[in-house]
Length: 178
Image (tube, rainbow, N blue to C red; front, side, top):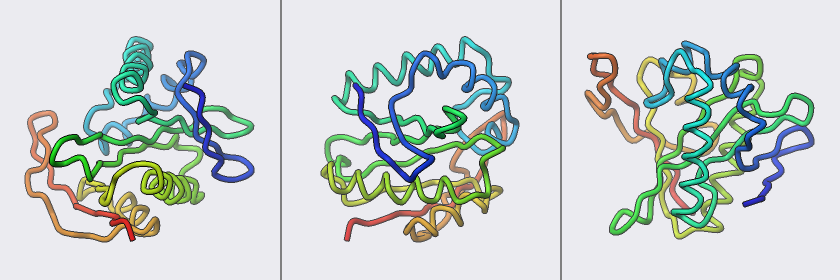
């Protein structure tokens, strides 16, 4: 399962590993990440990290490739995650991207560079013509990040998600294979 994508001198993408558990718990115990994602719980406990690590292995076995990547810093280890929600059948030409980055590393352009390189890699290695990003409207920074990485806004999905009894709209963005 060992596969590595070098982003720059400090950042690389790899599979998630058992030793990532402490950083998963530390960094995902962040209300900002919880507010801006669909499935990451808060508080985030060790059992959540165990479930995540098992899911990443299961996804690899199911799809025969990594669908969830650990973002690693040369000095600090795991600092984030990025992956795709894989579509099959008549929707097999598209995937949906999702990501998170630990608070100390935000605002440095790391995720923009990761998204650019990984989406280009996906277009080169998979039969994709479309990668979508759906971003809650209360998270404009994430929409800007995707735009910097080559995504274009397509519209708003009204009442896209139901979370804690409240509906949230999402900005739809997509990157189309050239």
